[in-house]
Every structure is written in C-alpha cells, then in structure tokens.
Image (cartoon, rainbow, N blue to C red; front, side, top):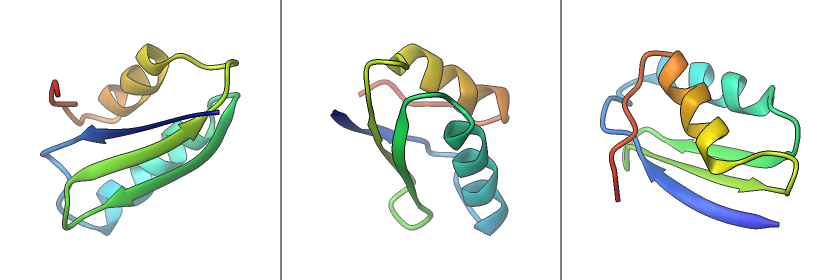
Length: 69
C-alpha cells in the first residue's frame, strides 16, 4: 500500500470534497481518500492496481488542478 498527499489549491467547499472523493473512490485499488478543505490537500492510500497518474487525472477531470510538489 502506498500513501501520498496531493496539494489541490482549488478545494474550497464541501462540494469540492465530495466531488474529489467520489471520483477517486471509483478507481480500482483505492484504499482510502481524505480531502482536507482547510489544508487544500487530498490524502490517498492505494495499491498496485492504480497509478498516481490515474489518481491525478481523476481529480483533474473533476475540474481541480493538482499542484506539483
């Protein structure tokens, strides 16, 4: 299991949280997703069935930019 935290500066409300969590949870191999509105971060725990690029793409497809770390 891999854990990573992504910076998503566009997160501002509960709708953002639900949108991102819903999109990422649909991917195979996701163990957990936690969006922090205050921290503007997405903490993800995932297995080998999914790539970080696929996770970032799912977030970006919802209209949110993922900042490079």
